[in-house]
Image (tube, rainbow, N blue to C red; front, side, top):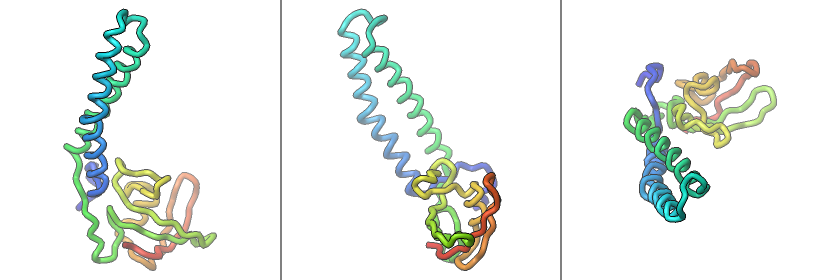
Length: 158
């Protein structure tokens, strides 16, 4: 698959996580906020009713998130991890060693929508992700980032 064509790419896990979030909003959170609005209306004057105003604001944010998640799921291309050839691709887990300090890090390559560097999930389109794509264990890579140039060795791909 050519990932350079501005497609919305998700791993199977990412697709399922988004589907789960959407289901929770539709079946739990949306009914809760509708109930909050109904209860707040019963308290009388809506212009000075903080509970009502807060519930309506929450409802607006939930509806926006529902539209966003539905659009992602409708447009997403699910990419299965197929690194039987040992090459880094979307869905791969990669262990890299910093050639300067010897520290190792593990990353999962995902689409931009799923990226969460704090969780070790990096986008295939990021500086590090694009340098890793198509490479194999034992390869040395140089990553050009806004913070400078860094050299790594790919320890393993799974």
